[in-house]
Length: 214
View 1: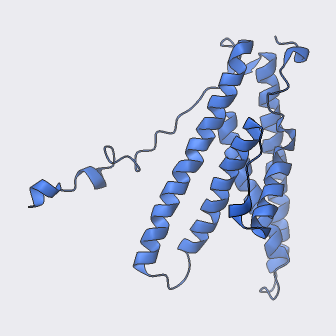
View 2: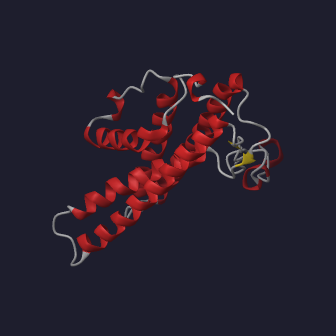
């Protein structure tokens, strides 16, 4: 079991992750994304970039549901959703890879420890989405001129989301503490998406080639 005194300060502290998500969500709604710069520290930068992918994905999916959007507009939006979702998944994996690389000099995770079914990167992704849900639910509570009962329904929704985030954030902190103590371990679980790979998506590779069609 690791002595906490021997844990490098460069390893992340996940206790402020919900706060980081909230600060970035508010910032990106108030300022142009082009002016934002990722934090200098490696782990906060990775987590911020992963949250940015979810932020962009959220608003792109909103655009996909715009009434009256043309087929051409929807096709462009769908491609953007696919690209952003791939970036989101890639960054979740990069977080796990970076954590495992940082733990390796400490001989962690302990290969004999109990395996956790979900990695930190996947939990961080879920927390990122919860932060966006919380922000937009608060927005709906204060929305001017909503239908009757709208604010009350969203207050109930906000309470549920708050509890879900507290629970998940606590589970992430517990997993990390137990990993550092050598009593639990996690692995990198690659999502191996197939639809973005032309060699694996039958809708792409079954198309006749240019030479066959001429």
